[in-house]
Length: 93
Image (spheres, rainbow, N blue to C red):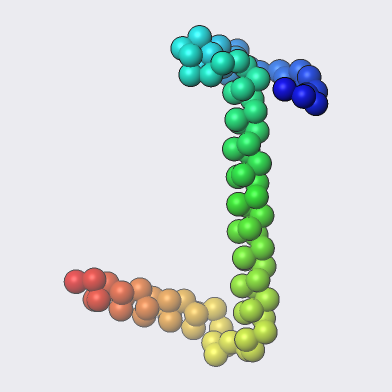
C-alpha cells in the first residue's frame, strides 16, 4: 500500500476487544482494515450530514423569500397544525 502514514489510535478496552475479535474471526485481515472502513463510513456520514444542513439552509431561505406568514401568532400556527393533523387521521381511516 503506497503512501501510507502510520498513526497511533487509543481505544477503550471494549473497543480494542471488538477489533481483535473481528480480526481473529477472519472478518477483517487487520486492525488497520477495520480503522480504514470506519473512517470511510465516518466520512460518508459527515458528507450526508452536510447535505442535510445545506438542504435545511436552502429551505430556510426559501421560507424567508416566500413572504410574510398568513398567521399572526404562534397560537394560530398551532391551531392550523392541529387541524391538519386531525385531517390526516380522517384520511387514514
